[in-house]
Image (cartoon, rainbow, N blue to C red; front, top):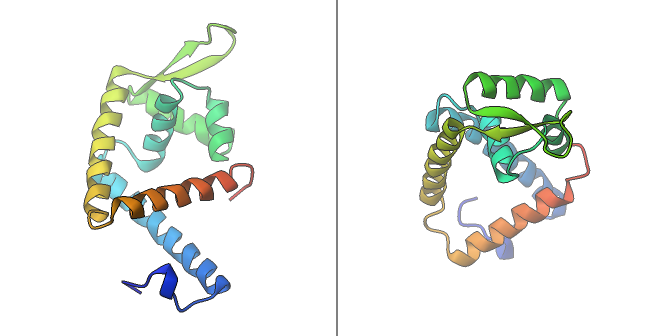
Length: 154
């Protein structure tokens, strides 16, 4: 299938959906495997949660659970692991002292920056032959795909 573009793809809608499913599954498996190589102390799930906390400039564990459609107990275990690793800490919400807001520690920000740079390098290498237009279209398609499923279970 290398070299086949949308314009000359030999498959129809159902075949395209099957292909998308297979390729996204392969992508997810490669991402999990690559995560361990890029930063062995920061598994993919932990990196993802830490990156979300950082991107949001702090958030609650319930926000993580809702955003990633995860059980609260799963998020709780992941956050506890991040805390144990010294990558996140809890702070009282200034507007409501009963609420705990998760924020990256200095070590968390450093681990995130290191891992982000490694991942960016890996993507840069893998997508190096793509044009800027191809990259922009791919980014747009990913945003569209993920936005369409924000209110749905996977």
